[in-house]
Every structure is written in C-alpha cells, then in structure tokens.
Length: 557
Image (cartoon, rainbow, N blue to C red; front, side, top):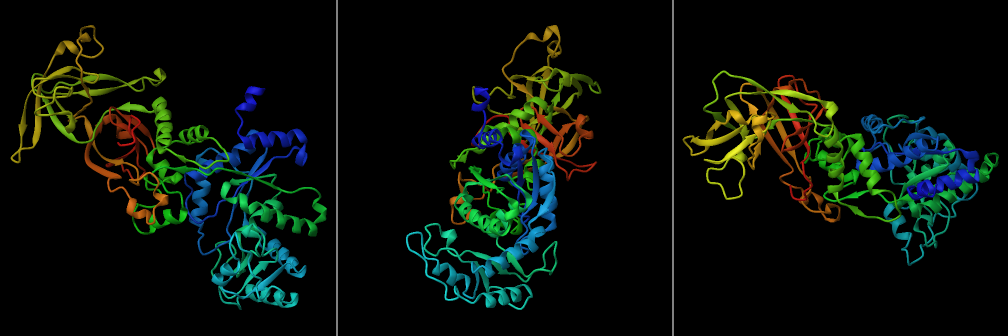
C-alpha cells in the first residue's frame, strides 16, 4: 500500500485523502475547460490527462466545458477539433457544457452584486483602470465611479447588454479592496461590452462576463469537486473563492458544497512555443501550413506527424505533475514516440534520395523473393517478402567515390551486405555530363544469401535498398524542430527564431511495393532512416510520408 502511495502524484494524494474523509459524499467530479479560440497543443494534453485521468481512476466523472466568454476569438471549428483531440487521446466526457450555458445565472449574480453594493459601473478607459490599480508595492486609487448609486449602475448595466453602450465605454467592476496585496482583488472587471455575434447565442448578449468571473461559478453550478488547473491561476484562486463566498450567501440551499481549486506546473518544451496567440500568428502569417502542420506542437499536428496517443501518455507520465515550473527537453517527447513505435511499427525499405545500383553478374529478368522481418521486437508480426532484382535503388549518401578509412558503406572495391539479400562488391560507377554519379556497378556473391547456411561471411556495412521495377514512387517530408533556439518563448520576436531547415521535401523517393496499400496515419520504420507515417494528403497514385522522428536520440539531427 505504501509503495502505491509513493507512485501517486500530489493531486492524486489529495483526492485519496478527500475520499477517506468522505468529502462531497465520496463524489469525484472534474472538468476540462478549454477556450475554443485555437487548437489544443501538447500542454493541453497534460491537463486533459489530469482532468480525465483523475475521474477515470477514482470512478468519477469529467465534463467538457468550453469557456466561450469572448465571441471575437471563438469558432465552431475549434470546438470540433478539441472534441476530436480528446477522443484521440482515449478519453470520454460525461457531459458537454459551455460557459454560455450559464450566462443567465451569471447575469443574475452580477445584478445581485450590484444590488448588494458590491459591484459598480465604471466609465474609465481600460488604460485608466490599469493605472488606477497601482502596483504590487503601491495601493491603488479609488475609481471616481466607485460610489455610483446602485440604481444608476443597474440601469447602465442593462444598457450595456441592450447594445446602447459602445465597446470600451463602460465595464462592471466588483467592489472589493483597492489596497489588497493581491492585484486581482483591486476591483476586477467582471463584465465588458462586446458587439460581436456569439457562435452559440448570436446577438442575445452584448455584455459578456470575464473569465475570472465565469470560471469559478461555472464549476460551482456544475458541481465540480476538484477544479484542477495550472500554476498561473494560483493567484486567481482567492478571487474565485471570494465570488463563491458571495454566491453561497445568495444560495444557502447549496449547503457546504464548494469546488476546490488545485494547481500543477504547466508544460514547457524546448524548441517550442505554447502560446495559442503565437501559434495563431504562425498560422495566419503562413509561416506554417495550418494548425495541423507536423512541425506544430498541436495535437492535430503531432497526430499528422505520426505521434501516437500512447506516446503522449507515456511522455506525460515520465514528466509527472509538480508545483515547480520547468523547461522539458523535447528529446524526451521524441524518445517517447520512438519507444512506442519501436514495439509496433512495421519495418520496411525506403530510399529517400535514390541512386541506381546495377548488379552486373545477376541474371537479367530474374526475381527473388527475400524474407523481411516485420518487427524484430514482436515475432507475432511475422514477415513479408521484398523483390530482389538486377537493378536496385540505394541511398545516394551510401556511396562515396573516394571513401575515408572508416566509411563502411559502398565505395569502389569495397564490400557491403544488402539487407535481407547478398554481399556485393562495388566494381565501378558512371557519371553524367555534369560529373554527378548516376549509376553504380557491383557484383554479388551468390553464396551469401541472408538466412542460408552459406551466408556466415561477415562485412562491416549493411545497406537498405529497393528494387527498381518493384518499388513505387513517394514523397517524403523530413520534419525537424520548428525553432532553432532552445527557448523561443523568451525572445522578443519569436518568428526570428524559426528554423529555416525545419522541413525538407524529397519528391523522388522510392518505397517497397508492400506500401502501396498503406492508409493515412499508418506508421512504419524506414530501415536505417527513422519512423514515418502516411500523410492524410496521400492519394492512390501519390503516397506522402512524414518523418515522425529519427531512429536515434539526437539534439542535432
């Protein structure tokens, strides 16, 4: 039992203590509350695994609630993508809610705060309000509208929602404490005017609640027991509690129930930005090819690149949940997908930059079927056949006209093994008019066929290959890190840190014929090259493969 306790994260320990105390009658209810203003990224995956994972582990429920309090930034496209990403990670919500579901209740609560003398309409500009709040070391000054008559604030609040007040002209502020050391208590804005149709409520509302006003109350209305979020909301928690205290005064029938908030460290990755605003900039400015660009840290981008739900879960399990912020090396994420695919991806042959190899002593027209193991990590995956012929394709970088001493690939007079086939010795080569190597010639040793008793002779180099007539064309996209510096989020203009070599497209690749039936998102290990998956843009006549990750851990691929 003690060993199990050691393996729990600090939030799981809190939940277990609450269950032991019988809090909330043993009920566990969480929620995942994304704002539908962009696609989810790997940082959100950490929150999803916490919110849904806690509910799953302790027989509770987790609801999906969209924080749709700012109609100018939200879109149904984002709502749909968020639901797809959660399901892809293997989770299911109990209910779908929206903050807009609670607009009538939040409106009534705001009215009650005004009537109780705890909220007022302020006509200062946003800049004036910000200046008037003071600083962490200096108390704020009172708004000239702070003691506005209650009836006047009520009238203006209604006018805000009726569309009679221009945007930015008025705001509703809670009346709390302009000298509080917590800046969030200095009469926070709780409603502002937005003249923009909402994707669910249309033009029904023109006065919209701020996130800090809507969030805690939404938890309260839903019956959330454990409101789990990232550390930047820790300083907001006292304000959420203040609003709940006020709400409970007005709803004594709810008894002792209240949601409790707990915070964990957010995910920060090297060579990555996590700001949805900056990710949106990348998309809108055409610096990437959409939200699902495989270089993006979005879940849809990672999925398109070939990351698996299991690899995401394993990565999050490795980094864990703490109260301390850290910058996680992206190599750990890459290792997680490499580790997962190593056990499940089929091994196939592909040549990205083809150079023709002719085996001059191999009979013309002869075809041999060589056995290729599908995955040495899993015997149950069996094997498949690959055609061996007189003319083959090998990687251009596997040949050197003048090779250094420790170059164990193909060079004049040098022997190498062709994987799953024979040992061959390079006998010569041919150049084109520009002096580029266009064909290599070799002789094979028929006594060295892989898998036969006579094949025991060893050579230091083994090359992959595909048959010229029995391979198919493909496009291969080699993805690398989107940024060239470790922490682009710290730079003044993150766009100046973009890696110009984050994508290389190889349009003349050749892959073994076995892949002609491959489907979008299928993953493979291209022998000696890395893990690749089929891009959804592939067609019947044009296969496209994305490199998920190289075969070996490397910070400088």
